[in-house]
Image (cartoon, rainbow, N blue to C red; front, side, top):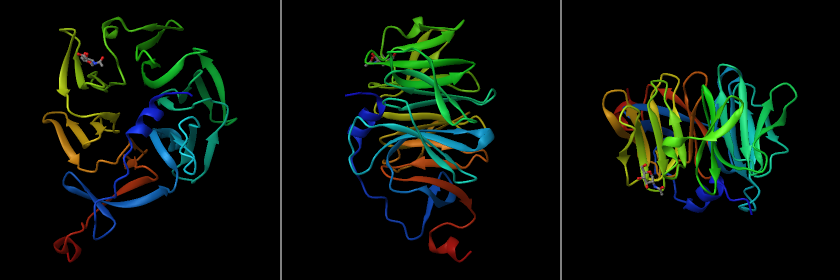
Length: 282
Ligand SMILES: *[C@@H]1O[C@H](CO)[C@@H](O)[C@H](O)[C@H]1NC(C)=O
């Protein structure tokens, strides 16, 4: 059995109904959004990442009929053309990282890292044969987290090495923001890493983090079992959405929210009207 982050996230899934809404809109912070389903009835879509220049969403999923923990696959969905494809050839395919500047799409599974070729639509083996790749992240360098030891690795001079500062503890999620703030999460909580003091500072030790993502304007969002939090540049971490069954979050080329729950991938489009009576009669 290939245990990786998708397995664990799947085990954490407890199916809850959506909050009751009078209309098909959702409030995030102070704004309302229309829900536009992109893909329905897909098993556990996780690890959402948008390749911006092609507006394609890459993510992992499993077949809804089986809910087997071993048959994870990677797929992409073009938000403009609605083209979709399952990416073949990656065993336990689960993780995604995108170098937006160089149009490189890295995919990980239970047997190493692959690169997706947009022209041939094939995944070519890249590096780390035999390594179970739990998670991938790209910022100037490619990072991955290995399973089961949960160690952070960085690609440097063509080779991968563990990140010394983080060797003493587990890492489940890793993110470096465009402001160079380092976030990471593990089973204990969410942390910010202070580069000068070389110290991990707890941000929240109650939540279980599912994804850390940055929008196109540099704001950080943290998807957790207690809802979605935003780390505003000045105000700190604030809950913006109380839905507990969000598992993945990404931003498309136009900075629209794309989220997933147990079975659906949904795009949110800003709406001038909300769901309460006052705004409906606006
Ligand atoms: C998670 O990271 C924090 C901060 O570095 C550390 O204190 C804690 O031991 C880590 N938890 C695990 C399970 O490694």
